[in-house]
Image (tube, rainbow over all chains, first blue to last red):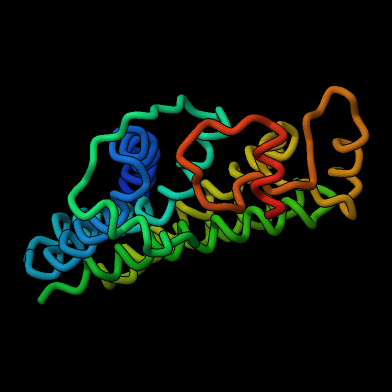
Length: 110
Length: 135
């Protein structure tokens, strides 16, 4: 019996679950314009997973990377949720580099 | 190069994405949630069985992760129903279950998808929120 996939699945649920507070707090602190940074970090972590020889570490990095990329696509909708009062709204955001340029791009949403 | 991380990441991303879309579609169109939830649980368990019998670590990871996201999706069907009830997701008037919500005084259900817009950068009241979506 191979328990690798079962443990990978359970671990993924945990990691995906941690993605929720990451999106909520990320949006509250930095605003949705931090999405390219989160997406870039996710892609880097996923790429790093290919360079690791341990199948456990590689799998964990792959799932964490995918969750970060997914989180980056949720930030815009989260900003609207906060504006609607479904989550606490914080007017003052910490400005990320190139925020003005990013603001002109269309934020991804799936 | 180790392909396991990429396979696991892809399975997680596709699992979340497809689950996200499918849960909303199924909840909105199905008159009952019990049947689709049962089918999803069954498929999820089948995937976990495949993960446990797979010889390949890669196949085991992909099916294990997809199976678990499916099992979570079954739960999400009921959480989505609550979102519709609270007006956080749009109700489908053609669905009898949603129609009852729209007609009930105790439910805040609405056909308006309040999230379908760009952020404005300020808190929006109920009326402005609807105007912002219609724009």
